[in-house]
Image 1 (spheres, rainbow, N blue to C red):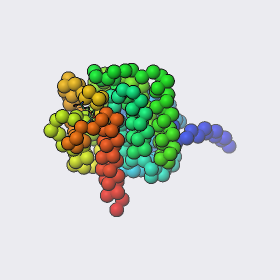
Image 2 (image 1 turned 90 degrees about the vertical axis):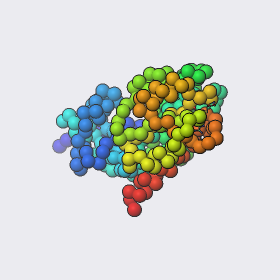
Image 3 (image 1 turned 135 degrees about the vertical axis):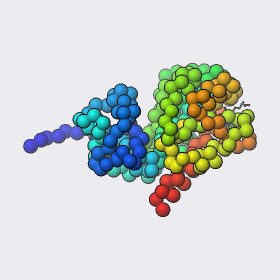
Image 4 (image 1 turned 120 degrees about the horizontal axis):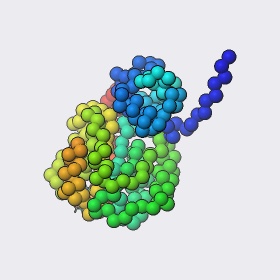
Length: 260
Ligand code: SAH
């Protein structure tokens, strides 16, 4: 007789990993070398630890890292009907004052998965750890209010130049840089035309003063697509909400097309 003692952590605290449907062979998931690296080295998970595998088509599985390297073991399906079908990251240059609180609240309501505050050339301040804790509390409250399964992860701020350099180029993911003064395609239009469905979406919003030319060039070199949010100039605290609404609309339309 084996007595197995399992500690259940709330689903909202588990890390999420995007896998492609072809990797799923119930009840096993064949993980790629990159995913194994991410799970073991970056997230520091060991055999027996749990994570959520998401197939980008709205299916989530509670999964355990197997003893055999490269294997995940599906434990259960998770009903994730309040979540967007793929992970969405907001990269946001910090606006001044308390404007970021409203950004965190609204993008959480709209389904963001990760919020990455960045310090850009025209960002005025670096937030205190008190502020970070406050933003994390706001994300938690907003996620509960919106009956989400996931509390968005708010990462520690990094200089934006370091961020572009590390941007992970996954060919099935899409990354957008919102720029107010270029002739670019609308974010929503671009996403609607992209390969369905992307494995992940990242969107970057500049500070009140906008991105510098050098920042725009570096982002484009790192694989970011410059996009527009419309013909009017939005405030740095309005732009993330508009961007997330466009993304949520397109992703939810894609996943509805999948199921009908
Ligand atoms: N003062 C800047 C505008 C900054 S607006 C200027 O005059 O150019 C702050 C940020 O919001 C921008 O960096 C951009 O990321 C985003 N933004 C605002 N309006 C936008 C629009 N119409 N299209 C795309 N991005 C926009």
